[in-house]
Image (tube, rainbow, N blue to C red; front, side, top):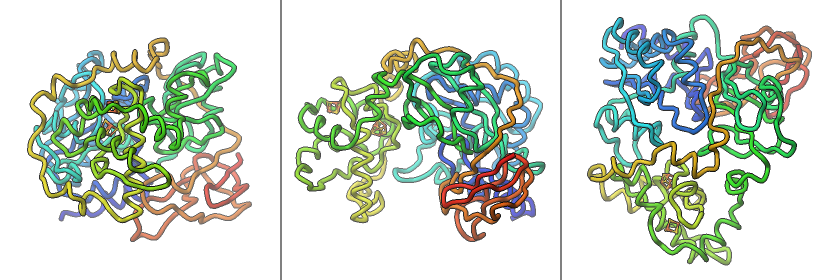
Length: 447
Ligand code: SF4
Ligand code: SF4
């Protein structure tokens, strides 16, 4: 291992760089692996979100810098940025930048959902099929989000204290903005001109994988992708907010086992043993407090395509799979010790290409046509009076506060940390100010 491969992951950890595309996986772990390819996930396939496109439009060199650093650290000989070919305007520039560098290129993807699922991305760009229950590194690939690589390139100068988010939907000025970590979505909505409607709810993240929020006091953290504001009674909000008793009861009585959910499932189409219709079937046996769940749920990547697009009855196979995985975890059944692990993935489905779901159709199905507008980058400098820095903004062990109330901090100071041998990254003050409150969730700083 060369000196850079030892030093760079430490730099990423100290700067608090984590997966900015929603997962929050600490970037230093990926930088510590050995790979042949580093892939930039610029698919941004969640409808309405634009922040990766805007970052590539305004800071493409930085993203490629991050890609090259990640390639050096992992020993990868090829770096490929995967972006949908519909983004013609920025692609020309990206290809120019790639040509001026060594061993990096741009790969064009179709406009389907979920093109950014990392196993789909690896297969579409390299033709390599990650094993069931495995990760891209199993086939020599590291996949990183656009903003993660941007943050990696900046990690020598400053830690992660700012976040790019798209604020769109029923707001007056849909936009993409850079804001300090730890502000609220209510503040982000104000930057976007305020609400256009009276009774609003939001989706924190994309419409497919994001979570419904009714409290706009929810904090922006290092993994936030954006906020989609919709009327409280929008069918997407109602569907996503449905609880387990309701989706289980309805699923049990309505599912006719047509198996459309399985036939269009992106992981099934990669040849994986995921069959959501079988998970639905298990509902018939799990009433009355009993938990009988199908192991066919175990390989679900929670993309929501089955629930929000495929099922003709409007049922929620994704939520049933998520619930099944949780129940199976309780009895210590995971993919590795399940019966599914006996059959290795053979090959992608022969009609995978024909079954890919176009994003335009998906937007229509989600009832989001009226909100499908650009969210241009809005240049502004927002100076909040207060931020709350969450202690858990990554996969792994939450941080513990390392500052006390009354302490003066500068932007970039570490305010929460964890032992070096635990999975996770420190968190940093995003403004200058005084620590005004600490609890087990966040460190509050007032300017
Ligand atoms: S698509 Fe819907 S109705 Fe058909 S099997 Fe799946 S959950 Fe049941
Ligand atoms: S959410 Fe549905 S479509 Fe997506 S991986 Fe899971 S089962 Fe397949």
